[in-house]
Each structure stands twice: as structure tokens, then as C-alpha cells.
Length: 347
Ligand code: KG4
Ligand code: ZN
Image (cartoon, rainbow, N blue to C red; front, side, top):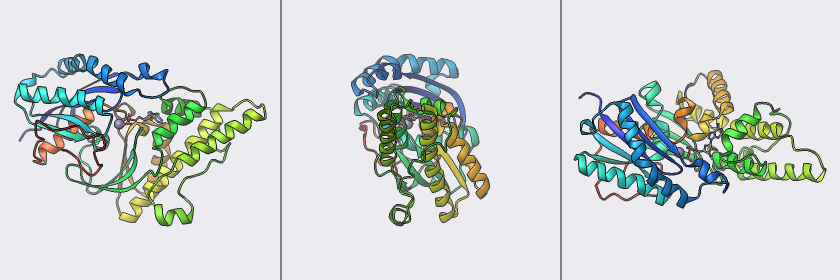
């Protein structure tokens, strides 16, 4: 069979994405973001996100189809994010995908957003070696996964016990008054800072914690430590050294993420790490992970930053993998699942 032509729709949070792929070949990736509408609230407002998806979906779809130069009738299947995400937001994408599948008489795949973040790397670097280890770092999730097969065999090795890495970036950016979303702003501010200026804590890395939480993460203590430090400086009437706090906070996050991912690789004898999720766009995480992978003889696969944040191409390529693996399509009456488990690739 020639490589499947798949259209993917993403609407789980504040990005409306439509991507089109032929197997691992990216044909179109159009994204409309409502991030500016949320910025003044300091975080995503679900109702605003849902309305923005509704307004953006058809134009984004039209742009993607035009830019790929395909005829919708030639599609082999439609893939859509079924979860996890915000219910009102997910429902917009899922309804659009159902309508398209019904009108075009094509199979429909309701897929897991988070596995899409891992799968997007296939567009740049081809099939994943089996098994591979995924370090998944997004606004809502932080996990170490063992990927036996992207279409059917995902094992969750560790997760955050409180905040996700992206959430920690966003919260710390807010308390530093940098704005929303915080990840890229801290990334930028940290460029001019000294990462060793402040010794912030590394969550779940003491011998006692490692015994119970070897591949789990915790970022809420770090966030509190930053808040305390800022408060202390204010009380002492000192100006907050934003670049130094940003760099030191960022170092604490990236140090733990990379150390635990490499430890899991060694423990399970896995020689490839694939990085995924919005925080995978972070320059220090990309750099430090590359350094440590090289030192450990582990191959690192990292999608380019533009593919790390939410988009439709990641959903389309995961759909293509499911079609190629012969996975049964979803029912047309599928429901969005806000809490879709990581181990479930499709509905
Ligand atoms: O994967 P994503 O686009 O949406 C979710 O599925 O959650 O991730 C969004 C998160 C936000 O928390 C954002 O601050 C973070 O990714 N992020 C970054 C960077 N770019 C986006 N965090 C650190 N550094 C970045 N350059
Ligand atoms: Zn995401």
C-alpha cells in the first residue's frame, strides 16, 4: 500500500491545528492560536478557547487543504484529538472530524494528543527504534514513557505528582510578571542569566524520594522556592534579577528532566530518547539533553521547535501510524475524553 494520506485536527487547548501528511511526509500544517485572547487572564479560559476554535476551524481547514494541494476525496482517513484536553475545545474538533468523515465516507480515528506529541518526530526522523523512551513535557503533562510501538504499546514509567513542567514555567513567569504563556518568555529571559546564581531545589531526587519515585517528577516545591526567593528580595528592597532567577529555575527543571530520562534509558537498556510536548521547544532542555545523551551514548531525537507545540500535523502522523498498523477506526459516535489515559493511543 502507498503511504496513507491523512488529515489531522487538533483542538484540545488554545491552538486550532489542521495538518495533512502522506505517511511521514508533511504536506500542510496550519495553526490558528487564541493565545492572545487568554493572555490578559494569565491562562487559558475554556469558554474563550471553545469559541475561538469554532471561528478558526473552517478557515484553518481550508488553508491546510489549499496549501497541501490535495482533494479531500483522496484522503485515506481523518484523525482528530479525542483527548486529553478541555471538553468544550475538544468537542469542536471532534464534531468537525465526524462531519468530514461522514460527508466524505472516510474512516475516523480519535487519537491521544500526548502520543501525537511523541509521534510528530516521525515527520523529521522516520520510524522510531523499538523500544524507544519518550520524554513528554507539555503544559498539562510530564511523563517518561517506554514506547514499544507507537500504535499499540505505550508504558507510563513516571509522571509528575503535582505540576507539569510547562505549568511550572507558566506559574513562575506569572510570579515574575513576565506574561503568558511563560515558557518562551522564561527561555528568552534566561539567555542573559546565570544558571548557577540561585540554588533552587531538584524535586524527587533525594535517595529517599528516588526509592519511591525514581522516574516521577515534582515541580511545585521549586515553584514555591522561586516565590519565596522573590518575596525575600522584595522585602530587602532589592531589584529582582529576572535573568538569573529565570536561568536558575530553568536549570533546576531541565536538570531533573534530563537526569531521570537518561537514568530510565540506562535501567531499561534503551538507546533512543524522543523528546515531545510544548516544553520540548525549550532551548536549555534541548541543549542539556543533547549533551547528556551524547555523553551516555544515547541517540536523541527532537522535533524542530515549531512542531513541539500543539499542531494538527502531530495528530495526522499518528493517524497515519494507526492506519499502517491496521488499527480499527473509531466509531462515528465517539466521545471526546478529557482524561484519556496515556496508554490509550486511540478510541
Ligand atoms: O504541548 P503544549 O503546546 O500544550 C499542551 O498540550 O499543554 O505545551 C504548552 C506548554 C506551555 O506551558 C508553554 O509555556 C510551554 O509549553 N512552552 C515552553 C516553551 N514553549 C512552550 N516551555 C519552555 N520553554 C519554551 N521555549
Ligand atoms: Zn500539547
